[in-house]
Image 1 (cartoon, rainbow, N blue to C red):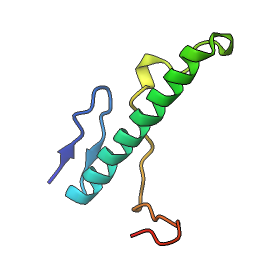
Image 2 (cartoon, helix red, strand yellow; image 1 turned 90 degrees about the vertical axis):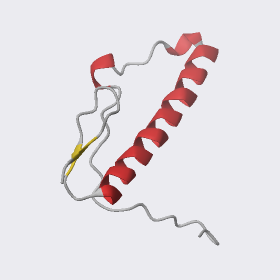
Image 3 (cartoon, rainbow, N blue to C red; image 1 turned 90 degrees about the horizontal axis):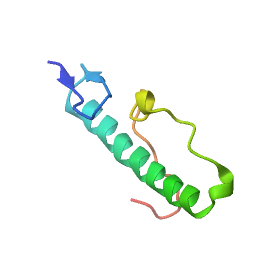
Image 4 (cartoon, rainbow, N blue to C red; image 1 turned 60 degrees about the horizontal axis):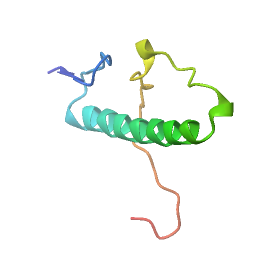
Length: 76
């Protein structure tokens, strides 16, 4: 069964099931958080210029084949 990502301008299609789609969605959330931090930094430093990422690929995330593994000590 196919599951399509409904994030605007994404186009990702999961054929491996819910776990793959969930991992993909978490990456969108992480990517959005990074973009918000970057925007805040750019607003505070006008001498840095504007973001160079275009609107056409702002929500494209790389395909992640495996789950992420936290290597911080005492992380669960």
